[in-house]
Amino acid sequence: MRHHHTGSVLGAFIGGALIGGALALLFAPRSGVETREMIRDYVDDELDMLKEMARDKANAARDRVDDEVDRLRRRARRTVEEAMVAARERVDHAHDRVDEALDRAEEAVGEKTSLGKTSARGKSRASRNADRAEHATRAAAKTTQK
View (cartoon, rainbow, N blue to C red):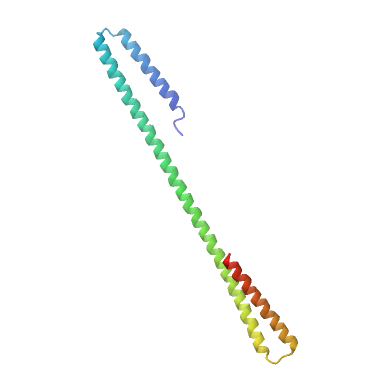
């Protein structure tokens, strides 16, 4: 922010120009036509200079806005990329949980079928393991749907 004093500088410039013009009129021995032409030329020159200053200020402001837009775009892009990485990590974690649940289910089913003609107590333990595995599978599936 280099231009904190733009208004005061511009005011001083215009004030000085008016004072200078008034003094020139007072001390210049010219005819009315020459004086009016001189004033017209002076005003035209000052207006051109003011227009150029305004154009420069507008271009500088446009450049600052463009820079800020670019900075915000980079920041938004970075935020989206970070969100995508976090989402991928969550999906990978959910897949891992589903795989673990499936492994437990396969083990439980394998235990249940390998028991064959074992005692009722062994069958109920295998059945409980199978139920737990099925429950874990459902829970993992629900997690991945969220």
